[in-house]
Image (cartoon, rainbow, N blue to C red; front, side):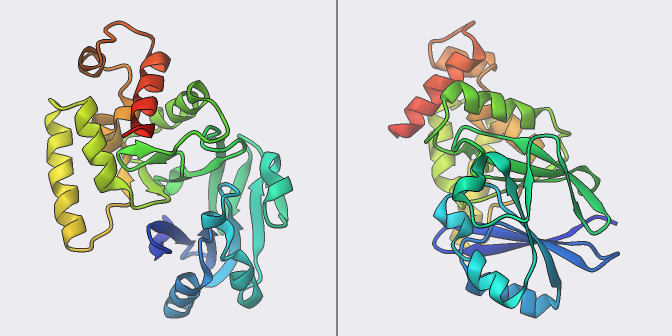
Length: 255
């Protein structure tokens, strides 16, 4: 039975997620931007928090952790490479390590770029991946600590997953990401249609996260650096995809 996953809006534009295993009753929290909305969701569902999966050290992904653990003691799992600046970890993981939520097994993927030591958690049995600030809906995180080629390599790992994988990313940036995407891939009918849908959802206050990986592959410019139409629009026909990605990310930084 797949994980029952709930999306929790936090702060101004963050998301946290609860992933519940119906078979065992175990529940994992992915990131903790602030305590109150997460505690509220735990109370509403009656779920027992057993694990916290931390993607990276930025405050808007960990600041609520202490308040949550004070009421719901749980095992905290995060990257070994990030342990020196994360809240205290019970389990330190690296790429390829397995994590369990009840009877569900997930795999750790190193997606460094936004930060060094940023990780994603892939649960293939539930067709779910928690990507935080690496792959986002119609975008990717700003490269603060790594390099743009490193970020491109990280996104390419995610691009190889099955298209029906559901991407649970960390922010509601989709509308602004879509406006930028149209400057890179203006002739893409799938993108045009998706931006229209995103605009309608946001006007109604509906979250645009999560998204399907197949949607991202078809419309997210940061996954399309290899595409001839994108390259032609940038005047980079035949260029190395890493160089094209670097140009796209640089343009987004200045957008």
